Each structure stands twice: as structure tokens, then as C-alpha cells.
Length: 131
Image (cartoon, rainbow, N blue to C red; front, side):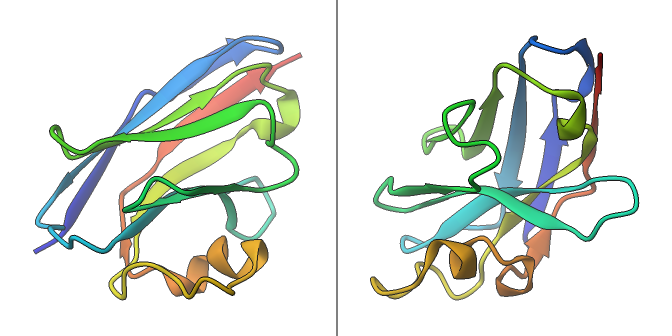
């Protein structure tokens, strides 16, 4: 059974940084894809960043250059380093994993970031950025 547990959310002022962690268990695919998603108040859930088993990464335009996704395979942990945070980054952040593993080489960034392509979800961690 796949379990994903997020840590590291909190409150920070604009311009500050946070690092989110996601501890994964039961997800032992050698060919995998995992990512971070968020749901802002009154908005649909959206993809923030994803990473696959060969270390390739994709980012939403809104976070590119500010957020970095990474993984520690030995610890089965996924990270999201968030710098230069803005009030519009306030959201519940979720870790997710894809049952079908890596996408086709030709998949677009938007397709890779689409929440409907991910099967396993954590419970979320709240990030609040004040101005």
C-alpha cells in the first residue's frame, strides 16, 4: 500500500523560504514519477513540479526559478525547496505519485503536471505566505 506523508508547511513572510518533504512508503517502482501539487483557496488543484526516476524535472511557469524539486532515493523522500515566496503561493500542498511511472518522452509539461495523471496522494501540508 502506497503512503505519502508531507511535512514542512508553515507560515512565512513574503520573500521567505520553506522546504517541504514527502516521505514515501510502499511506492517501489524503478520507473516512477512523483510531484508536488497545490490547491489555493477557491481554486482547483494544480501541478507545481514533478520529477521522474531519471531525475528529469518539470515546473509550472508560476514557480520556475523559485521552486526546486528533488529526491533522496535512499531515504524515499521527495522535497520541494520554495524560495522567494509570494502571497499567491499560499495553498495546501500535496505530494503525489503516478502508478503508471514515467511519461512518454513526448508528453508536454502541462500534461505531466495534470493532477488527474497521479494516483496516490498525501494528506497535504498548509503553506501560508503573508505580505
